[in-house]
Image (cartoon, rainbow over all chains, first blue to last red; front, side):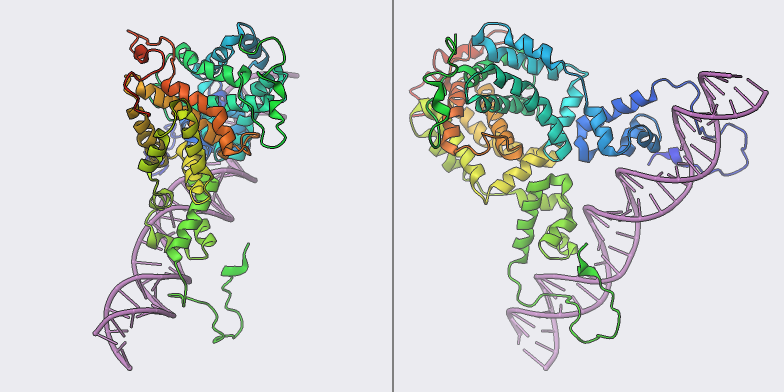
Length: 236
Length: 236
DNA sequence: CGTAGAATTCAACGCATGGTGAATTCGAAT
DNA sequence: ATTCGAATTCACCATGCGTTGAATTCTACG
């Protein structure tokens, strides 16, 4: 398609600085450009749908250079999808405030993360690839479940904490899928705080509410008495 | 790997009925076997991760035969992921019963569908592929959103029905992802009715509850008063 | 200036993939 | 028995992919 690589070499034309090879003259942060391109394309098409050649083209670079910097495609993916989230800070912000709005704060932080343009491609790429690629699945899981959700579960003292945390995870994943992957209206275009007001109570109930006497056999989940946490009052 | 296609032809051994070609002797429903294999592999690896050769091998058939029956790979996908859900019946079952358990019934039906072994591969395949493939996305959307969700929204008479329905969709998608795709415990192994009891109230609130005075401009969403539909009760 | 090393590209290998067209074999109708 | 069409396979093609190794060009340091 593109006439770029038509390196015919016909005719004389020896010294008219035909093609550039070897190291580039000025050229700033090439490595960074590759990484950015990779992030964008992974976000758009997922792991399988992304080709190293596309990444290279988008970064205006030879495919071999991609390998030179980041070895295999999987390693490139890992490098591109890695980002620094200050889990500690976020958790602290979530834990602070009236408890009947715990869920609202979680949703707000969650959506707030996705709405940050430097972060969204990463999360999108992970989400798009996690359904297929095991590495992506592990990263996504480690980023949502083993991180914040585990921490949240730690805040609760009840034995059914894992279940509550997983319920929260399910609603969060659903929001991410509907709002950012599928882009279903009106949720896709909704303001963050509005969404938080709508979905927050769900999470609050999952975490602190009375989920009803459950328990398949022996009822280990009932332990929490009437409400959940043995501490003062669950929901206010 | 498999020594099957080692058609060496060494030595004499001319007439010992060497290799089978052409039409097979007895052979029942080959087309159906191909379809079943396709469904299983699509469910496991998604659209991108599935190769026609794998499907053919799993059905013990030549790859060309797959093309013979179902043209392109996309068409095979569409054929394999199609299934008859009696949306009408399901909807009727959902609409019948006490309205404060509307959500429970929805969750129960939803999970009930996923738990049926003939149907799960289809839904899994769609879910695994929808994040990447546009065709799969359209099918998934048409199956969940344009089908039941739209119908549910129709039951409500309020102007914010689409929003309520999409919220329901988000929680359902989240459950599907956590329970069937990611297989996170304890939700993955939970009994259907137990899950329904936990998540049902969320959906009931999304559909009928007072979601708080919302509205970016002009608060149109309040219409539902305290509980929701003002009519005698579309939900019985 | 000279030179080492990093950055960058070229050219290609090997492989797997989706797809095609002709050939072969069987079942069923004539 | 012959014939016709469906079922099934073979042998390919063209393409695109991830990856590699050697070559080239620039920068930085002595």
